[in-house]
View 1 (cartoon, rainbow, N blue to C red):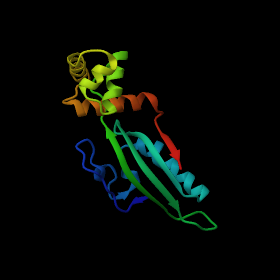
View 2 (cartoon, helix red, strand yellow):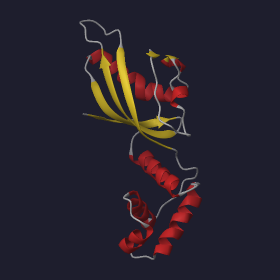
View 3 (cartoon, rainbow, N blue to C red):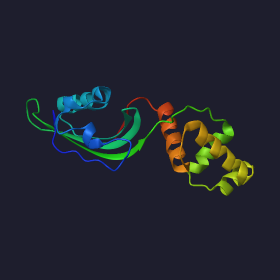
View 4 (tube, rainbow, N blue to C red):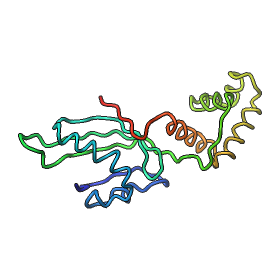
Length: 173
């Protein structure tokens, strides 16, 4: 197996070119990612000789990542000699530095925050003051090691994904 060309989106978390170096895929340093998210699926596509289009949610070097993937095997009467795989990254989240238990109010704040609500809107929805919402957000940032509200939101989403999804989940279209 060889990577022909790799693409990546800008991120300070992970350099995709280093993850998938040009050359044998055996050179990929995250063996668990390869053994769980790539190789078994590639073997299945080779065996079935059927194209696969899916959304993959997994971990790479401890980061929660999600990407769209299409895999096409050579069509012939014997075993295919090649498989073309194309992926499109969708998200990459760093796990929180510290784990934090969230109470029901914090969970409500997080959900409404992810939905795009402002502190005032969140406060009105859960019947607390806007300042209480701001204080709770600051405490969550401190507990999780987030530098700002955007990073906190990403960490909370990664935390939720890590607890609600198995190591590798795929959706076939």
